[in-house]
Length: 277
Image 1 (cartoon, rainbow, N blue to C red):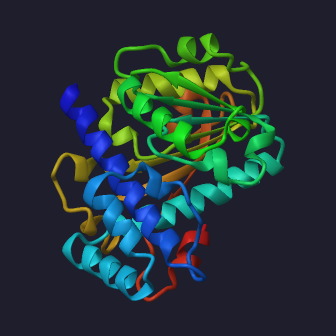
Image 2: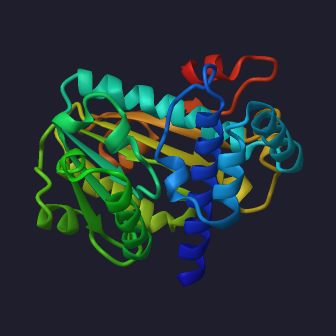
């Protein structure tokens, strides 16, 4: 279990690096995440700061993409897509936000409308302890009063009990973001979490989750073989809570779902890919 947590924590650092590199692009970036660099340590932070010199940042991104094809643009595209979905849900009446397995997600502090609703960040206690320390040093107290941290290990603890214990309002219109987590959990843990989310949130709430194709996780095929390249083995699901609705996901957890690939299409500007539905 410790190995899984260590891998998840490394991934959180890598995603923060990719967000910091995108932020450093300046005028043509697809989102602005000024806190991303604050979550980095050692060499990662040095790279992110060097990337503020535009030619250095562009060369660094090209090097990463040639050495490890897919993860960086996938992380950038899904960040923008999820940003847009969360903002739309808030405008549509969501009254609370749950960032499930939040990692180094900074949406609570940078997206419009977030400060007006209750935000709950649920994550493994070890990862969350590091983030809380970093947030205290980067965000003024008056800008973080709407955020409640909920330490929980989804492999062994009940999500609903942890949330309710920390003030989560059951059956309120909610937008849930579950990004970059499901591939680290067992099928049983994912199933149990979906069921609890269906029980806890109001009809019409939104769940945005990312996933990795099971065949990729099992090593049966390479990620690029799923849909023609890059991180095509990864995707995002935008879900409305609809008890009793049909569909594979809803049969397990009372949801109706739409799936969207989040990898940038070849030859398309990244900003267009990030907005594609």
